[in-house]
Length: 227
Ligand code: SAH
Image 1 (cartoon, rainbow, N blue to C red):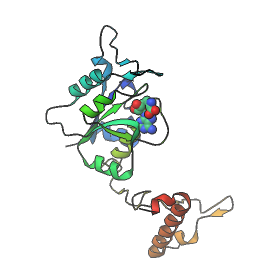
Image 2: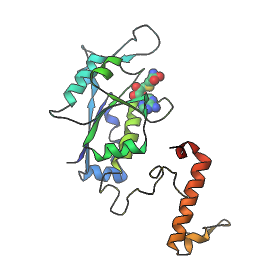
Image 3: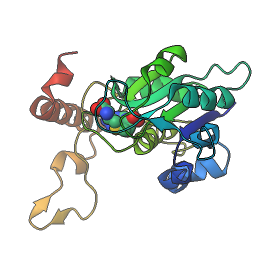
Image 4: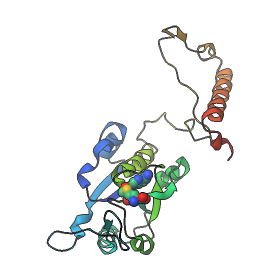
């Protein structure tokens, strides 16, 4: 059973976009995961297939209607579909690697991309949407946020990154940021690769990397050490 992503969006032509190239794209072509993007507007109302309306209580912008989005969701959900239903939203739980791992280990996700001022609160509650944020800034729509989430998940699917790559040593995996990397040439513009990395002592290399990861995390993200 492969990881199946279903996207609900007003811009299905944005997908697969960047997910169609490189390792994620290869995985898509070879069936290691699948992606379906569905047009919310197909469930829009009237001759103009309207999906949004003015906010109750006044104020700027437009809000995606609960009845339209619910119809789009209900049409996308299959019988016995237990995939998590996510709504990309700046008000959501900030996305972290632990949630990415959980999602990637699962059967896939249904992901709603908001636009305008967002979506009517009632559909979030009635369809049990889990709001997920990709960071403390506001995008113009949920599509790029959904791509960020999917990219993070898809690279963890077995086979997508190739055999050797476990991801175990990467940033966040051990609660730390990653140690610095070097490759050839050994000397460049007066800077050389730290001697320990070219000395061949693997225990020493592991110790150095651990110490560097701790130092960098302490300097840049002391909040990660509190956990
Ligand atoms: N008025 C809203 C912002 C709407 S932005 C507010 O102030 O909270 C339009 C859409 O872009 C949202 O519905 C959401 O789907 C998406 N979006 C914007 N910023 C996002 C973020 N940081 N993470 C995830 N999705 C985001």
